[in-house]
Amino acid sequence: MDHLPGIDHRFRDPDLLARALTHRSHGGGHYERLEFLGDSLLNLVASELLYRRRPLAPEGDLSRLRSRLVRDVTLAEIALDLDLGRYLRLGQGELRSGGFLRESILADVVESLIGAVYLDGGFAAAHRVVTDLIGDRLDDLPDAEQLKDPKTRLQELLQGQGFALPTYTVLAESGADHAKRFVVECAIGDVLPPVRAEAGSRRKAEQGAARIMHQALREQMESGRESLKAAGGSNG
Image (cartoon, rainbow, N blue to C red; front, side, top):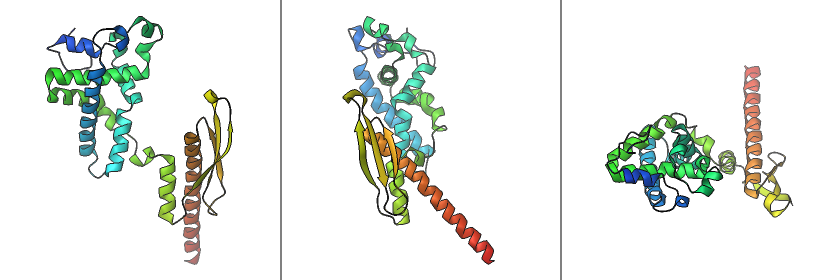
């Protein structure tokens, strides 16, 4: 086999393609070194495409957009679209456990294929393949603001209004080690009443509370602006 459907490259060295599809569990040469190479190429090409597509975006926004573009879940979706699972060479244990559908393995094999294309055809070939794989997804990326961590969004909103930074307090922790639950309270002084959120980790509970507080603060600010508009209209 010297090519795959959906990958615009025909391999001069079919062994490279075979290795790019071979998981460690299969034995012999496997794709991990190719994955390492492909990861770097993917990040480079994704960075260039975003740089050109979003000419006004600051560095932080570009980084967040790139992270969304090259994360495992996105790469696994690409692999599923290409039906790469059927071409994977897995050990019997991985086959029985459904490794050909595992997100991490599918993401890895996309990167290993990019690395293999680079070694076989050079940077231009790898650039073309990466652009084909992720190009359409550039248009589907959300606004960079939506990708910010909820705690960052809340902090920036508070700072923009001259308010104090939020505080997060763990109110309760329950459950066994493998099934912990955390209740976290987010407070922003006297601006609004504290809010709470519960999740399976402290970080996620803090993010949940920050998301709730951010929404409440935005609604208060919108309400305040509407009140000012109404007052201005009545004065007119």
